[in-house]
Image (tube, rainbow, N blue to C red; front, side, top):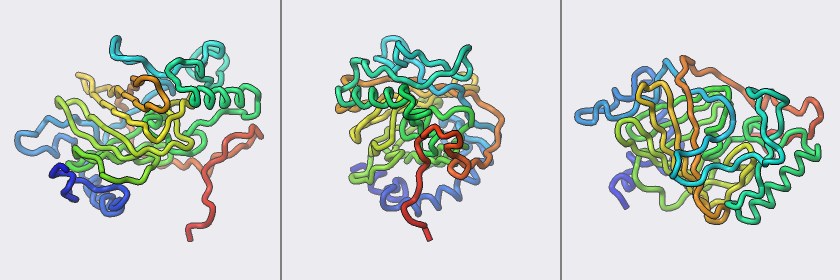
Length: 300
C-alpha cells in the first residue's frame, strides 16, 4: 500500500472516518472559497493546480445529454431510440420523453431488456415521466450527476480533498487526493473517488464502489452493475472560461466495450444558493411519477 494510503491524514476512508474527514474539510473549505485554488499550492507546486474553485464563480451547463468523445477515442454514449428522437426544452418542437436505444449492440442482454421495459412503461402512459434522479430528488450517481441541468455546481479544493457541490438539493461529492483506493468500502451513490492533477489544467478522478439501484449513466436510464468503474478528466479551457469532462465508463457485466462521453460547463458569476427538492416535489397532476425518497422511520 502506498504511503499516502497508509497515512490517515492524507486519505480518509469514507466508510470509517467520514465525519472526521468532513469536519476537517468543512473548516478548510471556508478558507478555500475565499481564495483561488492555486493559492493553496506551495513552493514549486505553485500555479500547477487548476483554478476550479472560487467564491466568485460557478460552473453551469445546459441540456441533459452527453456529447460524443473526440474522434478515434472510442465509442460514445447511448443515444435516443431512432424511432423516438429526443426533443428538449431548448429545441424547436414538442418536448418528448427520454427513450433510449435499447437495441444498441454495446448493451448486454439484461441491460437492453431493462431499458426496453422502462421505455415501454413511459410510452404506454403508465408513467407520466420516466425516472430521472433530479426530478425525483435522488442523487445522480457517477457519472450521471454531471448531467444536472439549469443549476450550477461548485468546487472546493484543499490539498487532501476536492468537493463538488451542486446547488440542486445540496448534493456533495468528495474526491480524495491520493493514489490508492481503500481496501474495503461500503457501496454508495457517489462511490469512492480518488484524484490527482495533471498538466496544471486537469483534475483526474477515478471512482469505484458505486451502488446500482436507481442509478443510471444518463437520462435514458442506461443501467450499470456494481462493477462500474468511472474515470473522469476535468479540464479547463485555455481561457479558463469553460470546463470539459471526458468520462470513460467500464462495466464488463453491462457493456461489451468501454463508453466515452463528454460534458461541458460555462463559468458563471453565481454565488451558492440554497435549494430544497423533496419538500416541494410531488405528483400534483396524477402522472404516477416515481416518488421522492422517504425514510422508513423518523430520525428522532
